[in-house]
Image 1 (cartoon, rainbow, N blue to C red):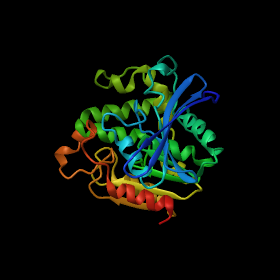
Image 2: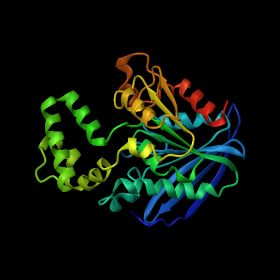
Image 3: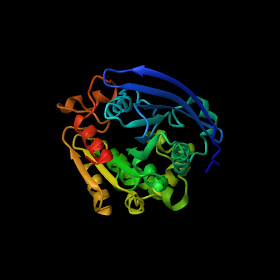
Image 4: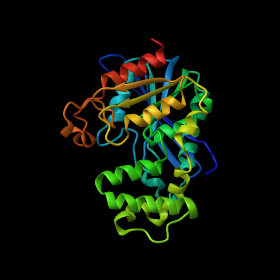
Length: 302
């Protein structure tokens, strides 16, 4: 894991919205050589602060191109909840030279850098981690020094099972090969000969990362969480299943558990199934209002 070294550079400006005066700060965190620029927005001091923990891939602070994180930010700010999100290390081109040996624990380390900064910020009354998709697991692992934890579309089994399921749904024979590759990876730490159709997934530079990820079971990790917890899943999610959320809920019986009708993986309200994938590529679909209500009620204890 990269040693944590923290520097911050802050630029402050104010914008006026129709609902409240939004204060915005651009903050750059450094985790060793890794740069994590992000945006903090809030309407008043002594408000709770959400720190967003990204899903897999090169996700920026807004969740482009769907901009689901930006939409989420605006919605919770209107409820007087502060919000911070940053460009994931894999989204920032300045980090490209330092990503060759990345492990899942490095993403956790990035979250911990952000928490460490805001933990000492007297402007905020509490810190809530929201982990989306892969970030659900990362946030579990980084939750020791925060006040509450929310899982959004989080996996309820190890990543190899999820990927095998997803590929099998598209191509059964390729799903079998994927299962064989994961078996070899878990037993030996590498895959000697990758099927050409799976090279983008199991390229040599990705194998150490997958090896570190597949070793973690969200069911085991959520049992370690000792703070108020909310588990949320949408019934239009085509990447993570309701059964995943149910598995998490069974492992954390004290957690609140909510299934949101017509919400998909990028947290948009989807009325027509044919619009599901379209919503990943545009911000024309609205963020789920029910999602915002459930999260606001949980955080503000309404």
